[in-house]
Length: 82
Image (tube, rainbow, N blue to C red; front, side):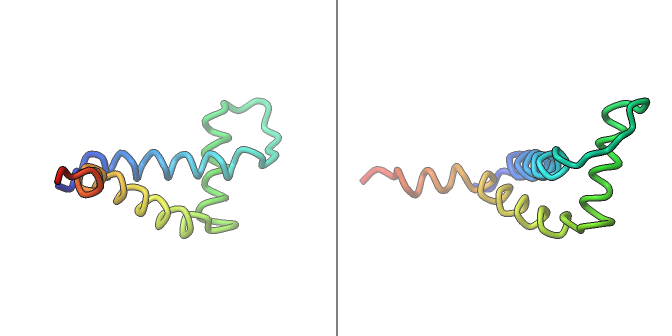
């Protein structure tokens, strides 16, 4: 059975993780701003403006979410009793 909860959780966590990885090594020099505001600026530039990584990360996150959504069905198919 497909689990919508696992799908949405896998989609959101993997998208945020991939975004965090892509913004981790971008040098931004805003020492007076809060960290989450600087991260928002970096993520906005990486995902939608400069590199358009959002077009790459979204399908990857959807695939991970689908895998997690169907995980119980995959487990029962692999480990079914004979």
